[in-house]
Image 1: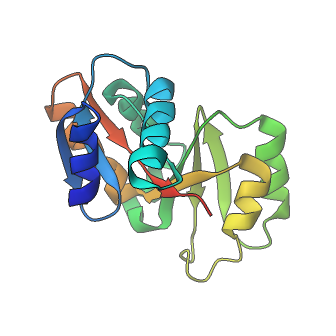
Image 2: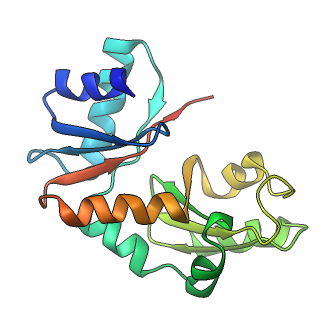
Length: 173
């Protein structure tokens, strides 16, 4: 995480902070949109660090929307560790979400709102037959965070300046 925070400082972003050791960063930027920041950070990581990494950037307002639009409110209150938010580059088409749901052989439920897919794993991810390959086949690459992490980042984004932006890097495979 130190290397990642230093990287953000080297490319001109300010106030980089990390949450846990999971690749969640918050920083200040006034110059770029989320999509522009994603492309910029991916390009700089490749050039400076020789890393092919996907970044998923959300502004504090977008983060509030992620939390507000959660279609699994009861499940999040009862069992937040079994709810995952999958951050995507673009909003998935409804037919792709439906195709993924149709392919699921277990009790998992997927719903999408904007550039996020919300997945509830009633029996936990470890026992699930819903694989990353299945998800990526229908929705594209993304990075997931459980609801506990999402709400922690939401608190940090809410208490910071309006320029804070959570980042979700995921190594490309």
